[in-house]
Amino acid sequence: MSKFKKVIGVLLAVSVLAAAGGCGQQKSSSSSGTSSSTTKLSGNLNIWAWGADEEAQARKDAIEVFIKEHPELKVTYTVIPTADQVWDQKASAALAAGTAGDVMQMSPDYYGMNTKYYEDLNPFVKKDGINLEDVITPGLLDRYYDADGKLEGLPLHTNCFVMAYNKDMFDKFGVAYPKEGWKISELADWGKKFVSGSGSTETYAIAKHWVMDNLMLYAGGGTPYSDDLSTSNMGSDSIVQALTLYQKLIQEKIMPSDAAQKTIPAETLFVSGKAAMYPMGGFEANQVINDAEENGINIAFTSMPCDPNGNEINVQYATGWAMTKTCQNKEAAWTFIKESSFANEEMGKINARVGIPANKNLANTIYAQTKIGDVGFDNTYYTQHISKAHMNPWGGTLASSGNIWTAMVQEVTLNGKDPAEVVKTNAPKIAKEFASYSFNQKK
Image (tube, rainbow, N blue to C red):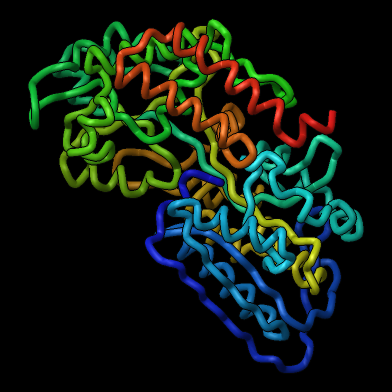
């Protein structure tokens, strides 16, 4: 599940019913994404989604556009919170029982967890004569295909990160501004220059954003597992190196510990001038930049850091839609998924409010050209780097291995354990988890 899905405290079920008048007509898309034919729709369509804050509002607004344009349908829209794995539990139970929605929000970072419940969208794409490469933003589509070629969903939007930094702090502590291609290992050197004060006056080189555990996973130059997900690499030297660097950054207060940051959240630490850098997700750029400017922070931006091999360390979180095999109105479900993804410009513009939209044209225009604040920032920072970003490494199927990684990080950064010993102890546990995953048992 995409991580920028923030917590909702209560279950929210929103039912939006369109008038059940005469059957209307729906615009279908050709390979260019323009209207080419009409298809009659009728009946019911049940949509399940997660979401909170701006993302939830954008999703609701987009669905209202769909309802307005298809008054012949009776649409029910249900939002389920992600807190305490409520979405995972409710969605999994409903899918298994055959009572899930016709359309379910999904993410490729589930790594095929629910694919057996999803309809293959390839026949729908072929029937409409669509060339998805022509209409969907590069870098967003590949992960929606299973290893056997099944298209289990279509992308809605995605987000990655850029590094925001406080120019005044770099000037004050006599450190050169980070340039494209800077390496994460360098933080252990010049990052120490930002360490000063104590308690409420303490300053750091970088705030400990929640994405940091995933970013540091790649800091040693390796990957946590093979591209085909068949083999865990968590016992490699690169993981030891990553944990060793992580431990050093925390112990030398270049980055705050979890305990230190409980009193001051990561974003607040940065916009209040107490952390020189902040990995800024596309989903939070508007808030971070506006807060920084309001507080008089002289903010600038650069790429995310590189590993020892010069590869950028970035992570993406993606959101899409899937059609369930139990769907009773497949034509309406396909129409909704298609229009949400790329075929409805008004819906695409709404998606662009919260991430890089799947609509290729809108991603390169409306989204990329959106300027935030008065610092010369626009969203091309994200569109230029999304292709370099790793998919959220521990989502869905791989969550059990991710829990072990989290425990490894805590042993090293909180308890001061030797990174090599932590890897030696835990790598076999992760290897065992990988061997148990269904996609590996099939091989």
